[in-house]
Image (cartoon, rainbow, N blue to C red; front, side):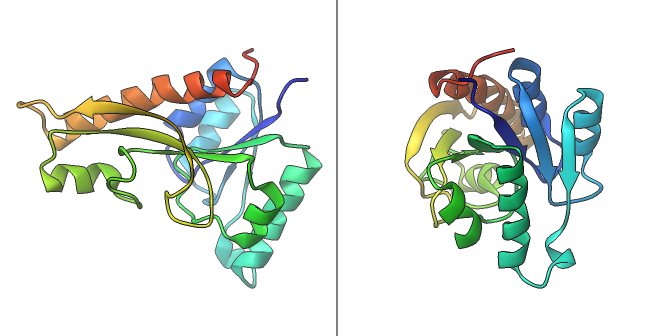
Length: 184
């Protein structure tokens, strides 16, 4: 049986594009109506949905709408790819063990929304990329795979960030294959 994927992204969607070019993606969801990921989805002929937390009475209602969408499409695996909302109990209880996240740092180092910038400011000699299962904490779920990315002597934050993104684009498809997701 082919696993049905959904990708959640809040912004640019470069990891979504890498995934969608190699694997069948049932749909992409964004929590911003104007996110560039929605344009990427259209260009790749992938269904897309967008709604924002402020359109709901509370986060539980917002996440219930997400669960309904996932259930409607019979999604087996949710790939968070730059989705900048913390997954709460409503979504987690319905899809626990079926949500993975990519984080632009070598966890447990530099969790949270600014992993690359935090690593850069800390002056580390290397950071990395982590893919992990999502749990109730912030970037605390069981680690699936990680890769280190060195900080080179002539790096700027932009070149360092670009190399971290390149590592993401290799690691996410590798992990999906290892989780049994069939390529196109």
